[in-house]
Image (cartoon, rainbow, N blue to C red; front, side):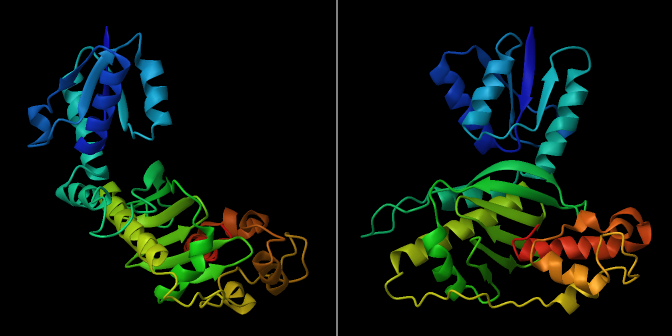
Length: 289
């Protein structure tokens, strides 16, 4: 009995193929069905007996799997749907270009890059826009010391030194860099996210190689005041959060003494949904989400 693993791109499928070969597992590549259109093969059939162990090993190696399908009736239709979904997440030429950038290796005359790639660990719909995705990616080294240098070269960055966290926008995307991880909100799909991560790799390596030439900036360049937060709250002074006013709640929210979930009307009432989405974006940008 077989089960079919579906991947978001040929990159992840090839990584899985290599892992299966090294592990001595029985497997076969599954061509994309006609209903999926002219897609590259992004699926592998494995023994149902080995599937749980294989998926665990793929997770350990940060190989993204978008679906696991039983090899039984109507597989072709299910596979077409899964490959179509995977394609929306990232099977595109843009992803291949991003991966090529990630694997560019060495710059002539330079040492090996500090960060060769940043692997995606988790993907979910973006809470601000369900047509886009939000994700967490892993940085293989601690980049805390490079954040002030990134803050210096990125015009719209906000640096929180105590955390530490560095947030900036790249087009519509909201990117937050932590010591060993990155979050991206409002990415179009995985291909778009991979391109953004490849670009971030270049920036990290750039400041690492030229940090003696760059004046680090340790202060955040974007300031959010309590009144900015207050403008997005219900402004009813209902006291449900335990404070005397929404302005007091806004101040304590910025001091991390409250969470958005402490504001009942904001989270409960549909009329405040747009404000809630915007507040989440603002707090994410400050590294407070």
